[in-house]
Image (tube, rainbow, N blue to C red; front, top):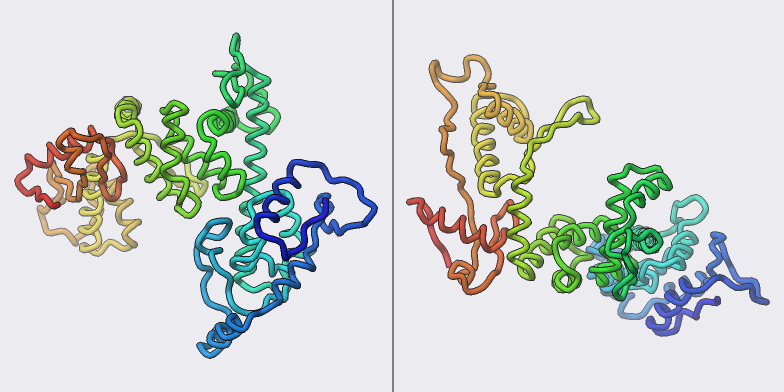
Length: 431
C-alpha cells in the first residue's frame, strides 16, 4: 500500500495510517522500500526533503537562537508531552532538519502521528541499523522516543484486544455474548490458568490482563481509543480501569470523559487523583461504599526488598490517621536530626518510624538530656488543610473534598472530617 506524498493534508496521512493497519501488505509491480522487513511501504526520503525546507521566519528565529548562544541554533528543552494533540508537538521548531529523523521534530508529521504499525517502520528507519539516530537533534530524538512509546502502547492495546477475543471464546457457564462489545458477563474459571500458561505469567498478572481487556471493551471505549492511538500507555489505561471498577458501563464512560482530554499529559499520580475525583463526582455513594468496604481489609504487609533489607507498609488506613502518623514521624525525625543523628530526612524518617513502632529512642548517646523523652505525646494532632465545597458541607451537592498530600476524599468522608475538625479549638476556616 503506497504512502501518500508528504505535501498532502495531515488528515490524509492519518487516514492512510489507519487504513494500513486494517489491511495486509500486497505485492505490487513496483518495488517499494521496506527497510525493516515489516511489509509497510513508505517514502522517508520525501519526508526528509520536506523537513529540510526552511522559511524566512524560521531562519530569523534560528538566527536569533544562535545569537543567544544556543548550540546549533536549536532551542533548549523538550517542550513537554509529545504526540498528537499534545502541547510539545503544537508547533514546529525553527531551523533546518537534515537527518533521517527529521519527521519526528516538533510538530512534524511523524511527531503527530498516532501509534500504528507504519509509525514503527518510520521510527526504525530513522534509528538506523545501529539505533544511533545519526544526525538527529535532541528535539528529533525526543520525538522518536515519544513515537516508540506510542507504538508500544498501540501494540499493547492490540494485545488487549486479542485477550478480549480470548474472553469471548471462554465464556462462563450459560453466559451469552451481549452488549455492543459482544462480551460475556464473566469468563470461564480456567481462563486465567490457560492465559497464565501461554504467557508464562503468574495467575495474578494474567487476571489483571483479563480484567483490563474486559473493561476496555465493555466500559471504557474512550480509554481504549486513546490507548490504541498511543496517547495513553498501558499503566495509565490501568489507572483509569482500576478507579472505575466499581461503576457500571454508563457511569464509567461518564467518569473517563471527565479526564481523557488531559490524561495523556498528566503524570500517573495526577491522573490517579483526577479519575478518582471524577468517580466521586459521578457516583459518590459507590465511592463511599468502596472506601468503607476496603477499610475492612486494612492490613500491615511486610516483604523482602531486592537489596536484602525489608519493607513494612500499612494498607487501607483512614486518611486522616495516615496524615497524622506521617506528620508524627516527621516530627520525631526532626528531633533525631537536632540530636545529631546522621542521614537525610528520608533515612531519619525511616528510623523515626521504627522508633515509634518499637518504643525506642535512636538519639545518639549523650545527645538527649538526662531523663528527657520523645516530645510526641499520645493524641498527636494532625496539622493540614481540608478543602470541602460549601455546598457539600450543606448536603446540597455530592462533590468530593481534598486533603493535600492524600488526594480526593468522597463527600461523606469530607463532611465527617470537617465536622470533627470544627470541634477542635485551633481549627480555622477559609473561603
